Image 1 (cartoon, rainbow, N blue to C red):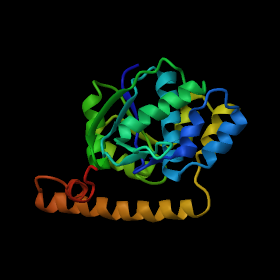
Image 2 (image 1 turned 180 degrees about the vertical axis):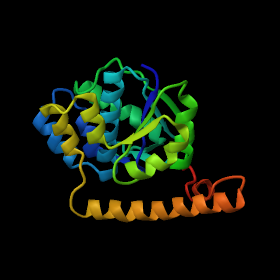
Image 3 (image 1 turned 135 degrees about the horizontal axis):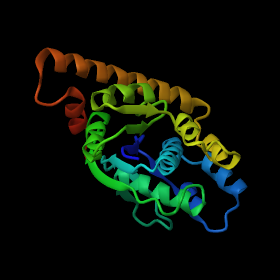
Image 4 (image 1 turned 180 degrees about the horizontal axis):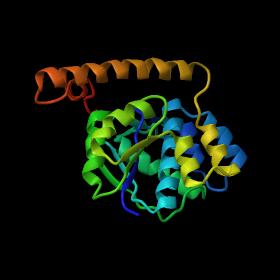
Length: 235
């Protein structure tokens, strides 16, 4: 089956020492889920997106790709060693390795990884450039971007679909107890949900202004791209 599945990254994310502990071999499912719920919100959200995208790609025999290129995601190091700063696609690949080690996704999945984008506008085009034919499926959540906003970015690349992680898992037929337990552990809680709503509202405003400007003035690059280049400098 042709097409492509891409989880759209929420960043910047931080893989702190709590998240690093999830890679320990021999960790029980109970301790893994408890530890996952305690990791930073952005990291958890991306675990859910990668999980759903990977299982959908496997179920439908579609290629899997990671495209986020903003180099601002921090991997903490123990014993006061210097932290690493990586792209979103690099961190997505690390998350996929974690899920494969847990046996939640197939170990044989080999995603395509490129790091060329700094905003959703660019990510959608990067994903489309990797698709030879067939459906382009994007997996997002409630913010950075929401599935509804992602659908607007992808609509010019028909056939395309934007799904939430739960929708992607349902389509893949993988809402079993163990998989759903991992997805549930990645959910936002408390003030995190309110922060996500505010962030997505600001992103919607920027996107709509960008669309209006592009229709009226046809600039060389979209407002979203210019803002990303101005404020999202690589570290």
